[in-house]
Structures are given as C-alpha cells and as structure tokens.
Image (cartoon, rainbow, N blue to C red; front, side, top):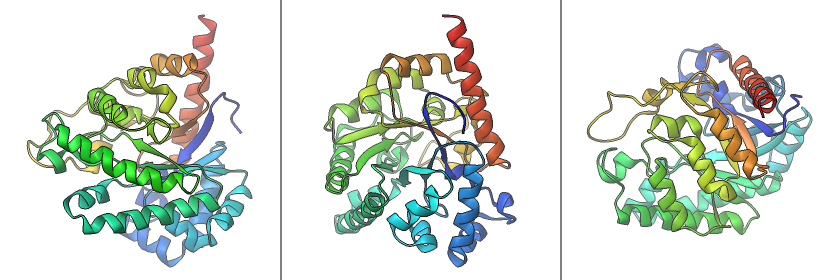
Length: 318
C-alpha cells in the first residue's frame, strides 16, 4: 500500500473505458456487468487493489451499488468481498440528473426518495458512511450554462438535497454534493450559496478539482473556504475551460472528459490545495480519478506517486 498521509481511494469510473474490458461501447460494458456481475466486479476490485490504494469509491453503472449487490449479495456481503482484497468502501456516487425530474414532477420525488433510501440502506449494511450526489445541471434549470443560477433554482436545489440528506442521515450515512462542471454547484459562488442555505452537519461537500477548474474556478479556494464540510475530494486535473460550449442547454459528459488529465498534468494549483488541507488537519478521503482511461491502474498509481513526490518537495522547501 502506498505510504501517504491521506486516505486514498480509487474511483471506479477510472476503469470504465470499453477497450479496457475488451469491448467497443459503453453499452457493451454495462451489458456484460449485468450478465456476469460477479466476474465483472471481481476483476474491477482486483484492478483497484493492484493500484495500492486502501479504499474504493463506487459510481453509476456498471460499477454501481446495484451491480455490486447482484455480484455479491447485500451490502454486508459486498463489504466482505471487498475486504478480502484488503480494500474498504469509502463511498458511493449517484447522478444528480434524477433530481431535475424531481423538481419538474413532484410525483417523481417519491421515486427519488425511495432510490436514495435503498442506496443508503446498502451503504449502511456495508459499513459505509458517505453517499455522494451529483447536483442538477445548470443548463437544464436555467436553459444555458452561462446565467447566474437564480435564487429560486438554488433554493429548489437546497430543498431537494436536504430531503435526501435527512433520508441518508436516518440510516447513519452522510450526504455530500459532488461539484460538477456546468451544474448549479461548481463555481465558487455557487458553492458558497449552497453551503450558506443548507445545514452544516447535514449536507456536506465533495469538491472535484478537475470539474471546478473546468468551470473556471480555483479548487484551492474552495478547500480553504469550506474545509469543515469536505468529507471527500476527487483529485484530478484539467487543462482548462473549453471555449466551444453550447449557448443553450447542457454540456455533455463526453465534452468534459476531453479536458481532464491526471494530477499534475493541468492547471490545478496543487500546492494551494495541499496547503489548504494541511491547514485544517483534514482526514477525509482523497479519491484518485480520471474518467474512462486506457490504463486505469497506471493512471491511479501515477496520481499517488505524484502526490508523494510533490508533498516531499514541498516539505523540503519549508
């Protein structure tokens, strides 16, 4: 295991590229995970173990909690299977796109609550204390990614996430918002606003450095401003904002992924990020992540190695 001073996890989305699994499309990978969930999850967890991290964070399908349940049984059985590889679950992510449906159609709010309950039940039985939710897409709420998020949209976002957080807390699981580029919770102002109108100790934060940089922000500033509410952070880099974004509607995940790089290969101020965490004696999860890469194990190991080298150099200059 890598000797570092953070609780390092690997995000399973790093391992989603179809060619890594011998397929051509994402749909083929998902179909394989559904047809042979145990084979899929066994390989996925073995690959994560080989990186040297101590933790693993689940994502949407195919490496989601439902596929884990199909592979191993309930949350407790999943924990046993993962622990047998020297790993622990650090958390599990669910997309925020469903929240948009909950805002538009109140009848869908019950479905969202039920899904959140089942997810949290799985995590509680697996001994996991953290669920991550994506926020709502800015273009879906405001019609474009460019306007400032309206007060009503921000209040609606706070309301629906607070409802989810009460559901998870009742099961001993904390809820953190994952910052996603071009959503209603990613820009520095957006994060300030949502943190100001949600309850500390109920709604937490998972900054994603790559997404924040992609949307024009400074991850180090976000960490400095909100460290007490940060339970986890996704450590990835970004080569900078795009200049060819659509005037109307949402930005696709595929467009975002083209900008992401592993830690140290982009514009993120890692000195500032590390210093901000050091100032608060942080003990959350550091999640190594690059979406859909050809050699995920090597990318995760490179992130860990970069951190160790970078930290050593920083300490030598103090």
